[in-house]
Image 1 (cartoon, rainbow, N blue to C red):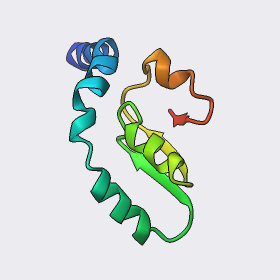
Image 2: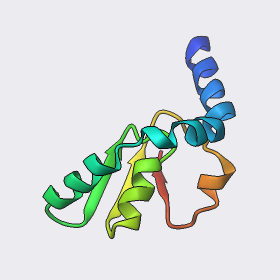
Image 3: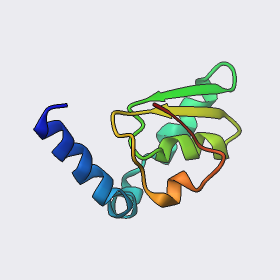
Image 4: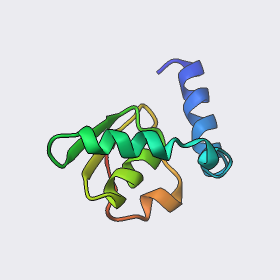
Length: 88
């Protein structure tokens, strides 16, 4: 892995909790609700899910949500949620 990629991943891993807290207000819940109404079926794969905030929203709304991202280490808060499945 290139040095800059490792630095980027380390930075993300070290700041994910603060990022989630500070950007929660930016999450477009209205858009996600409209998206959920148009989805056929109950399974969603979120490519590039980052820390998994949208996956949590989808699960809270009755979907089987799976997420994958280039960042493999997530906050202890998200990893402790047994209903979240992160695909490596």
